[in-house]
Length: 251
Ligand code: SF4
Image 1 (tube, rainbow, N blue to C red):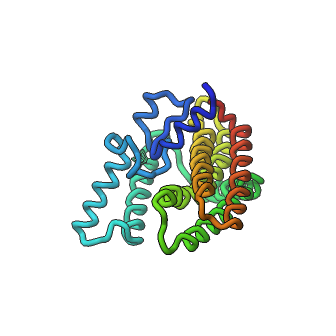
Image 2: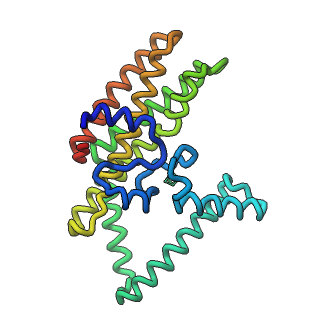
Image 3: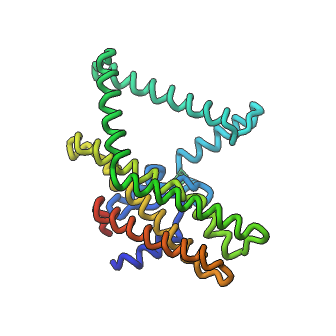
């Protein structure tokens, strides 16, 4: 199928998006592994376990008089989730008779630092971070520029830019890290997280480009801002080209 046709489909999809190489059964069972967490726009929120759990915990926080959007609520949820994960891990380790000694901890930390440095020094990470900074700056300029009255046709692309301005770079870094880790695994044990993360970043970049194009077409836009936008569009197009090549995102 023509890739530009598929790119047009992806533009209108938010939340969970099925990578073409992931079987539909897997996707519908675990949609939260293939999503951008924009739950309010996700068509699968009615079947998503992560979303349902989040709603339940929001209700609990409200009952306890805690604002579910507060930092306190965030830390309480994180603590609970870490505790649950720890319990599950301990149970599995006991079953598999695995014991962790202090030396293992140190070794693990050294290995993790090594991987973090590899990700940090990767050219793609550096480019994506720089692009994220440029995009944040542009979005700030646009908010300032349209301060008086944000036109209806500008609101939606601005919302999209706001949502994805860090997302694409975070997902790229995750893709690079997973790629390093997958090389240490047996092929049958991998979940193709590198490719899936790169795919989500790729789709978010399509939306960023599309939003930038819509804003660029706005008739009263200042010439200097428009030049900035056109420059960013071309940089994002290059980034997507590199992502597609490096992570083999053929569809
Ligand atoms: S509802 Fe679930 S799958 Fe959809 S965006 Fe939210 S977490 Fe992801």
